[in-house]
Amino acid sequence: MDKYIEHVYNALVEKDPEQKVFHQAALEVLESLEPATKKYPKYQEKSILERITVPERIIKFRVPWVNKEGKIEVNRGYRIQFNSAIGPYKGGLRFHPTVNEGVLKFLGFEQIFKNSLTGLPMGGGKGGSDFDPKGKTDEEVRNFCYSFMSELYRHIGQFTDVPAGDIGVGGREIGYLYGAYRNITNHHGTCVLTGKGLPYGGSLIRPEATGYGCVYFVQEMLKTKNEEMKGKVACISGSGNVAQFAAEKCLDLGVKVVAMSDSSGWIHDPDGIDRDKLAWIMELKNVRRGRIREYADEYDVEYSSKGSPWSVKCDIALPSATQNEVDAKEAQALVDNGVMAVGEGANMPCVPQAVEIFQKAGVLFGPGKAANAGGVSVSGLEMAQNSQRFFWTREEVDKRLHGIMVNIHENAYKTAEVFGKKGDYVLGANIAGFLKVAEAMLAMGFYA
Ligand code: NDP
Image (tube, rainbow, N blue to C red; front, side):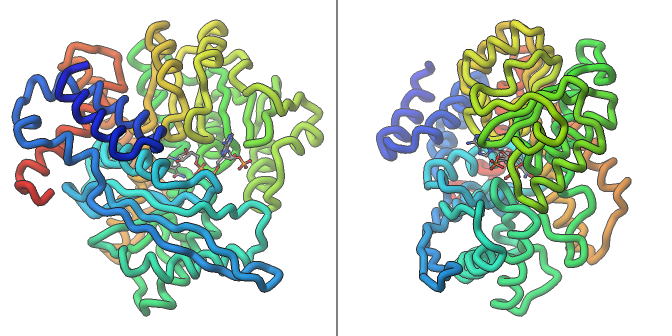
């Protein structure tokens, strides 16, 4: 490793030794930036890497809320305002028991480069809580969201920081959070959150955007090998927001989806999850809040609580659940089964060794910060529509989303080529995302 990169990385580990997942994300980015920092010494001279790896601000607060027995429970709340060089902080809120400062720093750091790649003026941020909405009543979730927002509201705003959803924060939670924000501030119509419901300022295609965008990205990767989506077989992990709409777009493009999962297990349906079955999954997950195991009972297919869907033979793999869900063994199984393309619907779902295995085997590999940038892109379009006090049609938003994903692909592809690593989308996406932010930071002196 280059001395400068090593020095920056070691300082991060030394300062916060327990933040392992953040170190993992930082190392992946820093290593791939080496050709750029070598080519442009000004970044080292102006300490850009030292600055970009430390959040501008970390907000940490307690969230007391009343459970269904009338007892007060307390969770931790966070907002990491990582980098605002090119626009207001932008990034989702995650409600999951595994949330801590290190996890949110990893997600906020990734978000800086992802948002830059979209071409829209958005900085990087992330937030959330160790609160687990699973198994809670609607009233408990509402109580929690109100309390969370009663602190968060003073740190966010359309020109400051615009949160959205992530794991555990879907339409229901965004509704409660926005309701609380309105109630506390008496503001309406400004874009303080994205992923809002359609009746109160949301954008068409926002729920679909991450999953659709991921499939558009994979489609672009396949084109570089003169391949098309039609007729391919896909495995998707997760059955939440990203996974559901990745599956829907696969069906639109003639891809057969044979596996999906949740945190308890996975199902394998060799006949394919068709539109009716997918609608059933959406109802199961979004309304009844049930388990994917029930799909196996309903359609008489295989279910397993052991292993992962990556043992199923497929052409396209879309890991869309959570970080570090594809290990080296699973990556090797995918390669042995002839996988052609992997698009990360989730953030950092593949461990570094898995990425290496894919790249060595010549598998097209789309890293999350490029492949799943569709969600934040349409969040940016939601902000644009809210600023105009106007709404675009479904077709218009989808066309813009598609255009953005094509651009991201081209940018990552060409950047990798310019830096001598043709086909390395990890390097291409990291450098392309970095250069814009770094130039903005340089232009603003040491305040950015
Ligand atoms: P959801 O909460 O809607 O769905 C998450 C899915 O992943 C669920 O099926 C969940 O299972 C499963 N899951 C969660 N944790 C684990 C785990 N530890 N092991 C196995 N499965 C797990 O979240 P999203 O679909 O919104 O997010 C999925 C990923 O995509 C995350 O990495 C997120 O950061 C990323 N992402 C999301 C965007 C968005 O617009 N929503 C934008 C860009 C990235 P269960 O039902 O059992 O909890």
